[in-house]
Image (tube, rainbow, N blue to C red):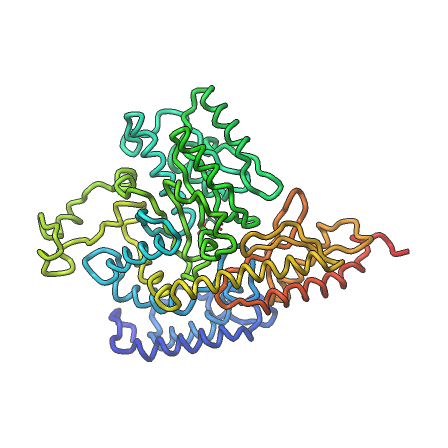
Length: 493
Ligand SMILES: Cc1ncc(COP(=O)(O)O)c(C=O)c1O
């Protein structure tokens, strides 16, 4: 039982037990993990086991104690942040890859799908002629894009920043609504977080082009080298899309790298009602999108696209290592010369980013697109955008709701209002906690122009219009109950 050797030939049986546990989980009849009366910690929190219990009992513990006490994120009514449970195709593909191709290198079907799926993404989102690389998500995808921007900028100044380091101050221009992974990337790349210039937005959360020009001008006068303009194709807070054409033109005028963060919002381009807002994408030098957000991949998949991956290689190469390259067939470069999948690495993704070992992510994206095609993706994106629009419509017309931002994509910012309430922020904060504790319809909150808003963001493949309606019904019910709390209301006359 506990001999240290894996049992073989049992996967079908074991996976079907885990599959049954997951099917049960996806019925969402279980309470939250922290619901009183849930007893899982005492089963799981044990001292280091000296002897093993064997795979059958591990499977049993997984199904009985772990899976049912998992996260609320996969619930169809969960609309917090920008994260969702993996679609079935993604689960199957990543499970398969974990056994059949633990690495993305070698001349295998998995290595091929890594590249094919990147081309499919580029094709689907109109990033023609761009080349991609997967990484763990938007954080690293932005890092890689800005790494390419740094490489390009400094090479033009006659320096190799990857080899020599960065010897001068640069400016990265990003709106105040930009995701903070841009600042972190600047820190990691040795540019300094303060290299990121916060550019003001208009009332709708879109970067102001006049403020951008002003900031670039200030830096040029101060001898600071402009390095990159970051445009958003779907901000995290409210799904705003920056004026990409105008930003791209400013970038071209000054010879500055133009990066577009579409981690969340790039798939919106599939909906022809909002597609015109993405004009200017063709001017981008780099674009990111996270399949693990709106496309339903399991968490751990982001993609960076650039015009020339060679730049990424120069920015991120780990340099050859004798144990790696030396283990492959010497000299051969043409696939027809290989006799074994391990004669060659296939496309060497490990040299284009920051990970050597990495899971096969392409097979997951391939499975997602292969299952429902572009048409299915478009339907899902439209459904989620419709859900945000539906809430906006109710919020515009209902006397107890206030629309705080016209939605662009699948995020709708609104709040509960009632006469006599002194502190709408406190009311909506409490309302939000109640929603979360009820464990059905769970948006996040954000602050818009100083006020607290409820912020559902719909990206889950299991969520539909009924969940948008149910969320609004819950907000109205809980809001009506809370307005009687004396500390948030003036006494009624
Ligand atoms: C616009 C944007 N960029 C980047 C990120 C970071 O992505 P990740 O959480 O996958 O690292 C997020 C996360 O929500 C995002 O919304």
